[in-house]
Structure formats: C-alpha cells, structure tokens
Image (spheres, rainbow, N blue to C red):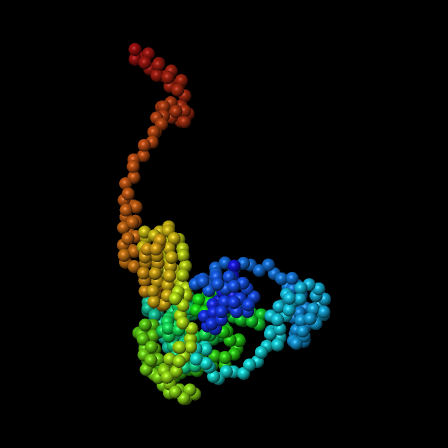
Length: 421
C-alpha cells in the first residue's frame, strides 16, 4: 500500500505542477498504476506497512562518521572505507539521504515571489482577553495567512491550536480565497510537524491535508524566524493597527471586526514594498493558485465511541449531551470551531454550538427531559409476583434445634392424662 507522504506528493505533482502520470512514475520510481490509484483516491491511505529495515542500517553509524569529517566523500569511497560488499544502490540511496545533514544548503532569503507560489502561516495570540463563555476570558490563537505575491492577509480566531481546530481554520481561509497557494510555509507548530534527525517530518493530519489539496507544506528550520518574515510582520501589524482601542464581546465579535478591518484597511492599503495595494495583485495571485479539490479534506474533530449511560461526549475539555436513545450504540462525533454534531446510524442525535470555554458541561434540555422520562419508566415498571414454593417445616424440627427431648415430653404428657382420668 502506498504511503501517505507518497500519495500526497503524487497529487501535488499532478495538481500543482501539472506533471503527467508517466513523468510522476519515472520521477518517484513507482508504477503508473500506483500513480493512477493515488490520483483516484480522494482520501489518504489509512494503513501503512511497517518497514522491515534495510541491509544498510547496520553500517549507518560508520557512514555518518565519515560524512561528519568529509561531507563531500563519494559513496564509492565510503563503500571502500567501511568494507561494503553488498548492493551499491541501497548504499548510495542512504548516503544521498544523509549527506544534506552534514552539508546543508545555505540559500539566500527570497524577497520576490511568483503568483500563487506560497503563503506564510502562523498563530498569533492577541494581547487582550476575549470573553469565551461561562464567565471565562482567554486569548485564543488567531490563524494568520499572508500570500507572498500579493501580501493578501487572511485571519481567523480559533478555539485552540489543536490539529482539529487548526486545519478546520486553514480550510475556512482557503475557501474564502476559493484556491490554495502551491506551498504553505509553517514553523514547527505541533499540529504541523517538527524536525527530526535534521529533516522535517509532517504529522499525519498535515500530510493528509496537503495531499487532498495537492500542495506542499514547507517547515522552516528551528530558530529561523526570517524564513516567514511576511507573516511575522503581519502579526506586528495586527497588534499595532487592529488591536488598539478595541473591545470584544466574544470570538464571533472578534472575527467579525477582524474581517471588516482586513477588507477595508489591511488589504486595500498602499504597500510600500510592492508599490501597490494587495487588492491590486490578488486576482493574478489567485489565478495562479491550485483549484480547491471537489472533495473537501477531512478537518475538525472526528471520533467515534459507544455512548455510555451518562450520554455525554467530550470534545477538548468540554462535555456535550447526546439524546439518551443512543445509549450503548456507536455514535460519530464531528466538531469544528462553530458546532458539535453527533450522529447515530446516520441520524442526528445531538447538535450544539461549540463552547470555547474550558471544563464545561453543555446539556440540551430536550436530552435531559428524555433521560428523566426514561428513568421514570424504568423505576415504575411493574414487576410480576414471585411464584416460589416455600417449604413447610415440621414442628419437631424446631424441637430438635432447641434441644428438646420429645420422648420426655411425651411421657410427661401421658402421666398428666392418666391423672386426669
């Protein structure tokens, strides 16, 4: 079965780069049928076969020692130094993977971008408290996205930085554009991925998201803020131009004010570096982007569970009630920043507005009434009388238990009868 990262790369090369199937197969070293299956699948593959290892694994420490001292040493020379007598193909492939860690590229920072090329993304935490319900106030993260070519800004406050909320927010912003940049640039956000062993590693959610869209997600190196300077400056612009003098009644009000500011201020201002407004470039920028796929990516919180007797499901740290008729049955839970929906057998059994506060219990009055009615029916259910035969004990059994000698009592009784006679 094809890996998620290979599936995502195949779709990117075909959708973003317009590469034909035969060229993709030749470039990735796979069959054309594998490429066709990956393009036909709208969802990422679920099962990933565990690697059995390679014959070169045992020699990797020696290879690393040589590359650490001689980064440009050819693979053939490395084979001589370590006494390699097996396939040169697998050795060269491993050297090709390890060499960039010891001879890293050092390109100059790019200051010019092509239309549709990329957008930089980041999470900004506004320096203000926003009411989130239940008497609580917080500073939820704001997802900020800036296009490299047009400098068009998009932003939206999210309930959390967890993968379920982050990718739902990214999809919402891309739907506003009705297109996707060919690359999304991120730092090492936990829901996106991190660097391991000198190379970036995306999370499964990030690979599935980019694969469905047919784009690339670029992870900046750690401690390299210049790699996404556009969005860092956008965050500063939000703090100095959007935030001062504003107050908010909740996340919806925050997003409404933010949308108005972006439309009437940020994206129509004269950009000194560009020499024009972002609004003057966005049309050409969007025309060069990748069209959104016909099937939406799987985003938000999604889980399935067997409903317990208390008929509540948990999203983040909050509990949401479910109609008690689904107790003991398998329910599907889907949540986004706006709503929590629960279905059972394809039928809705709960719908709640998403709660942005923490450690709350959200109960639908109809669910509580149904649960109370079901409890009353159970308590007042008539029970049939027990039809049990009870053993009738002889009186002599009680005499035996009390230690009474029946023969003595009988003789005394006989004498009394004779005296009366």
